[in-house]
Image 1: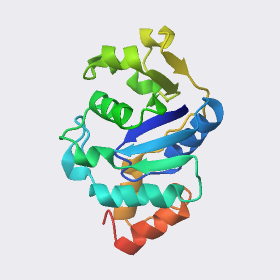
Image 2: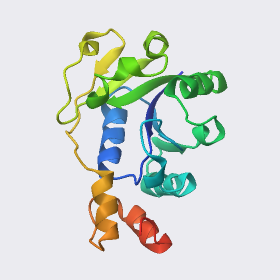
Image 3: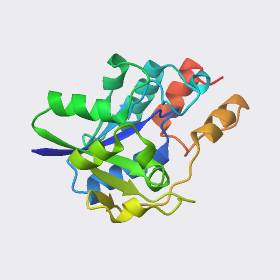
Image 4: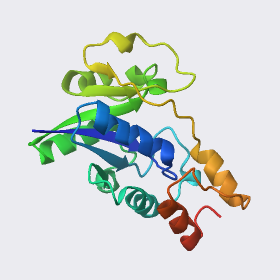
Length: 191
């Protein structure tokens, strides 16, 4: 049975911080693959700032084209919106009986995790792989048997900063892979 880490996000756009975390998870968290689950609409984010989901999926695919341990999935595009993590986990588990899914989240999300829809069910049936985040609030979930803290570089790269840089015609070199930068420029995204 393959162990798959699910990395949910709007990836608006995907940047090197996301890629470093995903690759670290494959290397240090006994995962066979990490799947980037591109969210069409995060229930906690305003829709207006989101690039179209197919463009964001294309950016993720451009970022990971040369790493066979990473995969982009659009499963939530076909699900009722807004999509909730528990529904996606349930759907993927039913579709892929040969895979064991684990949820990758930042330590900053641990404190509010109990507010997620069916958080108790997620913890009952799935493991949480938690990577460190700057300014994360302490959480009693850190000691939960289904929560595993994974040592990873502390990343604090902001997609908002990247979008603002693009809008003010500043370089985003090194913040995103070159393939992503070329796609953003070629399609005139975020302008």
